[in-house]
Length: 177
Image 1 (cartoon, one colour):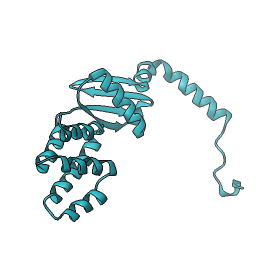
Image 2 (cartoon, one colour; image 1 turned 180 degrees about the vertical axis):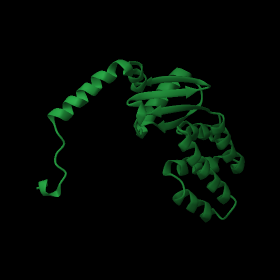
Image 3 (cartoon, rainbow, N blue to C red; image 1 turned 90 degrees about the vertical axis):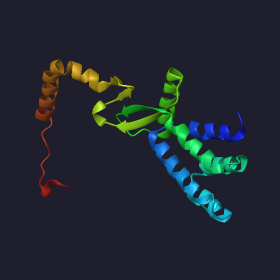
């Protein structure tokens, strides 16, 4: 594998989500608009309009290829060949958590994919995964829904007891310290 192709693999390998893909595609479009202008224009784009790691890889790739326009198109094409896996979680995931999910899916799937990460607090905890028409629910919502009819009377009793033993504090301004 030649150096420009290795750099494509590097840049695509760091792209884990559909948001990352969109951001990278926009960065590539900015570079494409600047590659045939004066060198200082391209350098300004690389310094100011791209994430540092993307600029470093693009700078190296542009110097290693004879056809920079095609090389940039190859990056975008490589991203288009990924499957989309919808991952819904109950909270806004950090980059570390996204990396964890991506690593787990990569070990299980062994195919090129991008995560489309969504947040749904109704899941309570856990995740749902949709891929190629298949849906898997690994959330607590599923468990709560299963036991909801039997839990509802108990929950109402607990709430009633809490209200009766802890009456609401007065809401008048005079009661405030």
